[in-house]
Length: 168
Image 1: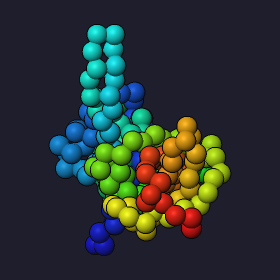
Image 2: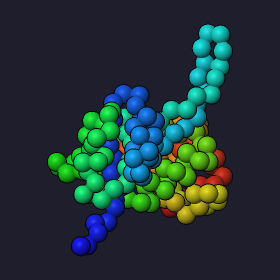
Image 3: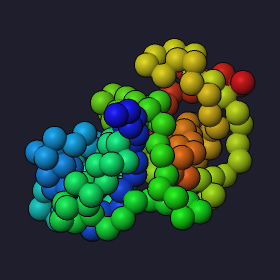
């Protein structure tokens, strides 16, 4: 019997259930990943660093098609993120990019790829993302680098110093 190749899929999960769904999947032996970022939140009486999902409502899961039923036994999963009625297959390099972005602690934001403002095409010349190409958005005199996650039609905006960027 030929074993089917495992692929990454994006799951849409119930509100604020990303970490719980990920942990349950991992406990069932299914590879799962939720990109988490630390952000400073301020209340009237205090400030606190909290962890939030980079892409709200998404959990990425790697499984063979035959394991779909096992995945959907987990409470909190709504459905696959789909395009043209087919589950979106997320590329390994996009998952690795999300892991790199979250592990290096850059200031980030997320958005829909269709709302992407056209800007200057650039390439990163130094640091952990050296060689990566993307688009610059100018906002409040800061440089924001945009990474497109084409398979799920989203983009991640990373604040980088202008010194590591050059026109492509």
